[in-house]
Amino acid sequence: MGLQWFRMDCAFPRNPKILAVLAERDGYRAALVWAGSIGYSAENGLDGFVPTMALQFIHGRPREAELLCKHRLWHAARGGIGWTINDYAEFQPSNGETQARAERARQASRKANCVRWHGEDCGCWRDPPADP
Image (cartoon, rainbow, N blue to C red; front, side):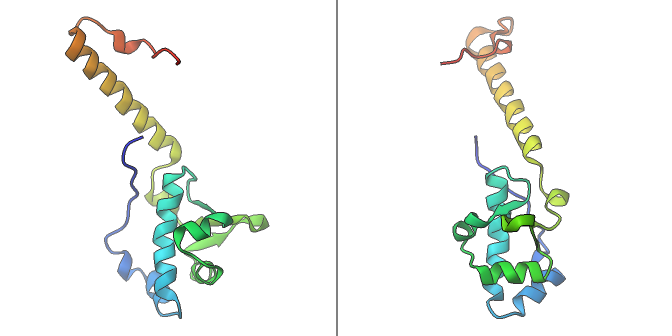
């Protein structure tokens, strides 16, 4: 898969929830963990979920998770298995949408290569690639 990305509102530094987190002790760390959590969830196709074990990979500690939940940027998942990012689906494409976009790009690439190397009348790009 190509370069992965996520959307970040340009005004997020002025978001009241972010401002409230920043006013707390360790708030700057929590804000970084929040941004990292969006990237982690998008990269791994988790649709806004952050598993407990991922906290270390997004530079977080339990303290930052507490702050993010306190200020409603995260919500604790049932069973203590992780957290969900508030409003993730409102701003980020779902994993299904991301996979569909990647498949369309693969098909377009196959078609362009077919036309380039075999000519416009070939159409071999329509045939599924052979499994190795």
